[in-house]
Length: 63
Image (cartoon, rainbow, N blue to C red; front, top):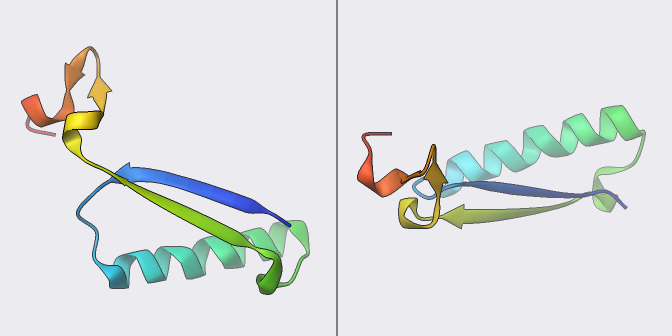
C-alpha cells in the first residue's frame, strides 16, 4: 500500500489538489503496478510563515 505525502505552500484550489492526487495516483500505479484503491495521498498545506529557505521565512520574501 503506497502512501505518498506531499508538502506544499498553501493556496492551491481544491480542483488543483484533485488533479494532483489523480496524477500522482496514476504515476504510482504505473510505477508500482498496483490498483488505485491501494494508493493513499496525504497533502499538507503549509503557510509561508512555517517554511524557511536560505535562512529566511518564505513570508519575508517575494517567493
